[in-house]
Length: 313
Image (cartoon, rainbow, N blue to C red; front, side, top):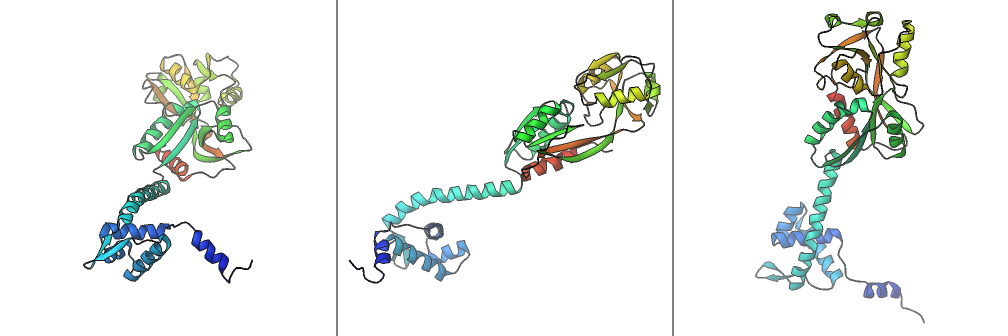
């Protein structure tokens, strides 16, 4: 059997289901809402002939009329009114998608999972997250505190978007970004005679009870090296596993401690005085993320926000 020239195409067109593309729906909706081709053209910022052409093409595809001209006005057909009721929610959804795109572009929407070591999880990160969300109420955030190795594993596996810490172990699937580099500080109980000094050295602390760290704490090898360099063979008065515990012990008068400069727990321990420790020993605060995953705009915005939250110095 031979089909006439163009028979396959003609047959396909004959049996194709009537349909409208998004542009045709947009023009149809504009005419329905404004009541005229002129109003639709003005609303869509196009010419009247362009609106007329799209409308005619849509009616040809649908195989029924959408409007009748009555006394110089376009009157929607019953079919048009039924169709408009179905099309209107589509454009409500399109508008919602547009708002979402704008929000994502401006980092006002999305979700962010942040994990930090305990020293940063008591004050610095909670304050930064609270301020960040205050200006982005539609952002969802998850915040966890983990030890250094657990934090790195969460970031490496993709369970967390961002991690924050210092003296962090290296990992092949984790990239680090320096946030701030500051020197170790010494903690004294308020009222201690050494508070009168502007800075302290290890020799100033020889006669004082020293609070140091267990081997699981990242500062432990740093402090142990300082003690060894000062040839102090006297055992420490107390060992703690967390830096916040060192602050607490100093606050209670149990001794003095050398801590990181980033945790910023002065507000939680008003009875503790902070003094620079000499010789200067810098500790770098780092933001870490998956090395094989690009950061979202939201994550980049949070990193910049946290930089602004860090104390000067």
